[in-house]
Image (cartoon, rainbow, N blue to C red; front, side, top):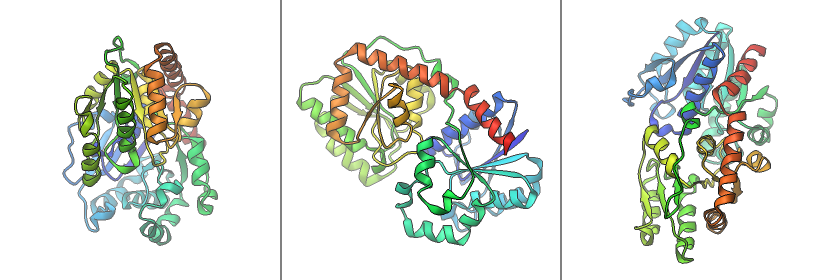
Length: 370
């Protein structure tokens, strides 16, 4: 079976969207399914295309660039869609998704749309008017040609509060974690204990709330060193976060956007990873990858993966505010046995649910059945 993935961009700043796509490709490969990727390229770095284990086609953008339109992509889809057994679109509200679903419909090819959280009521509030216009001028019509794919039951349930979505067929398949994260060899606990956050600097990612928690811990005499790594996506927000962290200059390091090798190295050293998102997320790849690496996780309940992790005692779920985050971090930093037990439960859960083989079986079944 040959599957085409269509995504608006492969730029590393795409973060979880790009990582989820790589996981899908790897998972499909374990089931003997070949992947091809089509993306709109406006000068993005191509150095890491090999990470996908797939043929990658990039197409020049055209107007309107705001919606990632590409006449070259449209022409290629029309000429080659019948070479594939299925197409999976990644993202929503941007033109590549619409182009792919319409081309699949015309060619009689099975289509699947993975919105990656973009149908969540919380996400729909952002640029709400623009999304309403897009929905009524083609998005809804295009999605009628597809089966929706969601990462968690919670994401599916939240998306279906929208009546138009409730009527569409859907399946739930978790994101796959790259095998490299399962191979991390943990180092001995450090002094001071090391906290890691891998969220980009954006209001929805809760980094400001995490800094507030670290300030509370600092005032309370808790010793720690924290590393925050992620793209400076919102300039004004990034500046405010750095200013807030001023008193923590000796305890907090802002590392910027880093590559996977650096992340794996940091996960080997970290005593605790904190995922403090304030906006709802369809999955929470950072938490899943940390669990696979054997790191204890404090995760915001805005990551829709967190409720099931709490039920399995595989992560410490919290509300994303400074006080709750501080309480959770202090509890785990002060109890090595509890931290170790949480890390082991998390790694076990990840091995059972998030390996490429486990996800590949589920994804192949969905593609074959529908």
